[in-house]
Image (cartoon, rainbow, N blue to C red; front, side, top):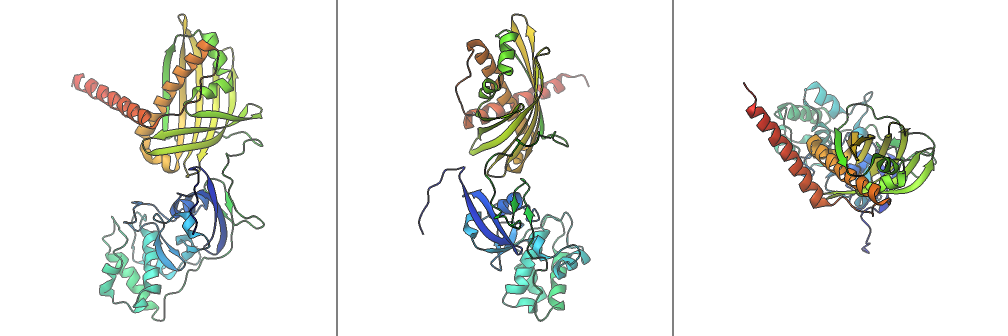
Length: 403
């Protein structure tokens, strides 16, 4: 085997069979099989719990045997036959294990259930005793998957019933066959006449405008900064997308698509996590009289993170300078959403504070600021300190309030 050195964001085409469908995905070398199945193939029945191979919730079948999909890189599975919980059965034709779990109420929140069903199938199909396994041995044999709800009794009873009902061997998966699989990021895998390989580039906004995100945002940002530059100079920066993009830490404009639509990329580091987003933006409001700009933006990282934002920038005179207000509704999904609302809000606010300072600098010099990355340690520490200061102020205010 020859070692291959690759850039972090470089993708590799990987082909395997998932639930009977031929699939090709383009993923970075460090993307796990679990993330590839969920984000690139759209099979979200495989759940992620500990992501250390301990809880067993991400269990799938790889070449007929149970495997922790969080411990396998997708590139390791080239040519493999994979079966997920979706392949075990369908709503109209459930696998006996699925029917038995429902009959015995062997689930509560359901988060561990896919792992238990697949692991139970592996035990009855590949275990030394097969379906002749002694019911007393089931608690030990099923201990590779953790449950926080049911107390295991009903799970053991469900598996024992299936073992007793099929002395000649447990039936195989019932929902495996050729079909088109569509990933959560819009990629299509296994479509007829299509290799299914995903494009690693940004979403295509050339043919249609960006839609307003729906639902509650992950976090909202409202930052107001007093700038030393006059409002006319600040508006010149806001009205020039190339200069404006250069003011956002880590952002770079790569293509003008026309009709106030743009393509770009942004790199952000947060501690050990480095994200490289490729995306598109569209100016939906440009009011020179009110000096207000409204932008919709969407970006995706090759590791499965995605972000959408509705950004409003407004400048008004403040003495000889400018008061710049930046408001944003930020929607996060994938790995980046795991940071939680509080940290996501702190980091987003810190980015916009840096952005406002860069706008002031660009307005003063008349030039776009030099490219710069949102530094990992500085961004994480400053965001954490900002959040801590805000919470301390809230606690002090509460303590001083009359009871």
